[in-house]
Image (tube, rainbow, N blue to C red; front, side):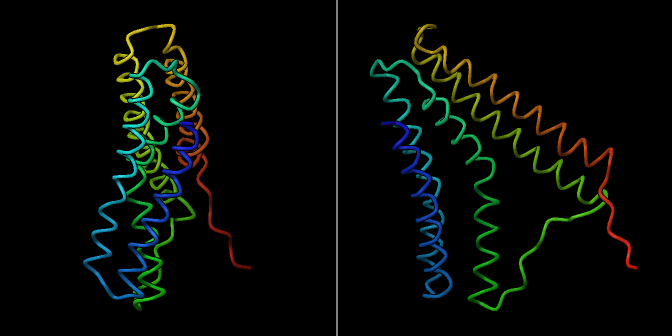
Length: 181
């Protein structure tokens, strides 16, 4: 059941975002578009409520409960930049805006970009872990929340891998621009 709510929230995120951008640009209704874009975080609140209600009603935490916390954390951390990414593309396509910005590809500019993205990931990790710990405290039963504890380890491992293979790697071994022949 909770997996369906997670999938539904992901779909709702993109539907509300798309509706907001369509209202804002092709339909030229900026206030309606802004209202819809502001409503995007409501999707996260629905997922948070569904997760906590399920745990409070006596459910044993499953993989889906941890996945919901991870989704919430990373949605909080990356949601704004995802909205900005989509907005730049819609503005360019439908409103004559400038071409969308691209991430740097080479050198220390790329390394700085990777460090910023990893920093956002750490915010997502912190929010997800806070939600996991809140769920653990809410339930108050170690046997029923073992999966939530496992998720803190999984997320930490992912963040450690991300650190090593992207920001550190691009800092120590910066990618160089190809030379023109």
